[in-house]
Length: 368
Image 1 (cartoon, rainbow, N blue to C red):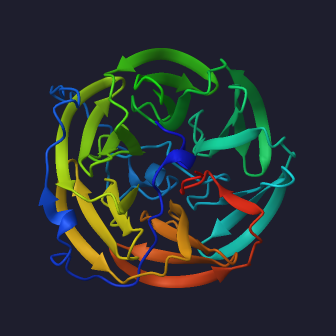
Image 2: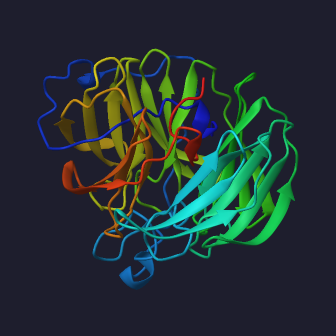
């Protein structure tokens, strides 16, 4: 529930599939500290299943049969089942969308200029139309959602102001096919969820306070029940997943400890409807993927070292095969998409160079 700009998302990708046994720090189990709130366990009462005919319009989370998935975590602005790109100029406030088909740009369109006091904090489907919408937040605490159809703004609406101690991120916590908003107070450790219907807040709920040595590094559906879960990481390297239903914690589990040089991000790399975790070592350039089932690691792959001048700016399904792909961007403005299956690169393609005044939103890298 942190702003994506605040997270340790420098995970960069990958060429081949190797064994991960030689990576000592990432394979050492460590439980969370005693200060971490007690995890609540109860039974998940329903699983949300959809036919593939509907699932194919969702980015990066389905298998070739009926599966559960998070409808809302999409970068797909035009509803064709392929992730698109939102660019923002950090000098001028200009905004453009590239509509994508794999590594090809099929169309582009401009959005209104937005003052630099505003930042895109999330791209997600708030109204359940299988098209990505945009959540804006200002330096004064104002919040606005643009409901989108391709490069067109269908509607714009304000949410309540929230002071700047609170940072947000999105996921479909209650499984209704509409993105919700999670908030974390970086001064107090308090956490709340707004359950959303478009630009309307249906309900709110509090989660346990979590001390500030922990941060949310991803919100994603780890167990395939169509409800967003929360991945926590401590400054000491401990990792915990909360499996969620609305504002309730159904269960929690610890993952192996990974020392703080390792940064993570998530995407469904193998197309089983469950989020996986990618790790990048910001000191060495080493890379690892954990293929996940809930709080269990099914398999791990060690990936080739990638130069630290490259960073991932988006993990999304660009070619519509229900598997997350990786867009990486260099410090020189070069952009390349890797089309992924599990821990293997199926193909790659270059996009036009874009100068560094332009950023892909929302950011997957720290801004401070």
